[in-house]
Amino acid sequence: MSTWLITGCSSGLGRALALAVLEGGDNAVVTARDIANVADLAEAYPASALALALDVTDAGQIAAAVAAAGERFGAVDVLVNNAGYGYRAAVEEGEDDAVQRLFATNFFGAVAMIKAVLPGMRARRSGAILNISSIGARINPAGSGYYSASKAALEGMSGSLRKELQPLGITVTAVEPGAFRTDFAGRSLTQAASPIADYAPTAGVRRKEHDTAHGTQPGSPALAAQALITVVRSGKAPELLMLGSDAVAAITEVLAAQHADVEEWRSLSTGTDF
Image 1: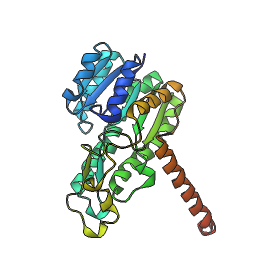
Image 2: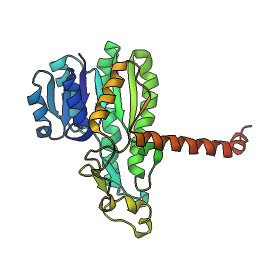
Image 3: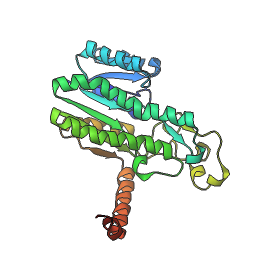
Image 4: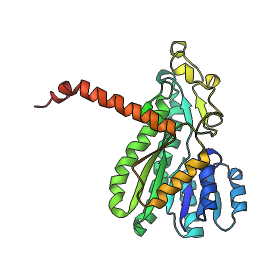
């Protein structure tokens, strides 16, 4: 029996994963900024679920959550950094304080969680870390520059961390979901308050008031949760896991375009050596 610590369990993928973990017989530390949003999970699974209030930008709450997980279940075997939210704005429109809050949650919050669980994982020479990223980190849509950057930072850190931890028996996987039927494009999506008219045909198209995709996304959170459990239990978690046919298609297209650029500019690129 493994113990999972999952951030951002109030809705969407985090909640679906918490349910799947508990239904599968593992322990789950289910967290949300408002504990009322996860209290029902602990009530439904009193022996295997621990509900905690956790804001990943609060160092004190992080330390308390990891300590409570250890006291209740003995150890954290799997950390899932799922807490995060979206922010849409043309780069020029982005408000400095909003961008700083975005990175505080999407990137630095995940780093803080990782640093909190790693001493225990290193001591046991085992563990798995899943960092929930986004295909935005690679496809870089107009209007999502800051969100894409926060997830690209998470993936860059994940790749280096994987190499650091691999000899210690700990796996690290960046997960890139496509569009899933969650509240991401609803309650979990913020945007710049003052749009600039010149960006209406690009970044403006993706503003919330113009988004018609919410509620029609192709991905199933329940099936994504099962995929994550399968990966962890496989014992050979990949460096990058894409979730959703749209994610696979989009990233395949991005890779092909990047390869074409490499070949087109190969002679110029290689001609800069001494």
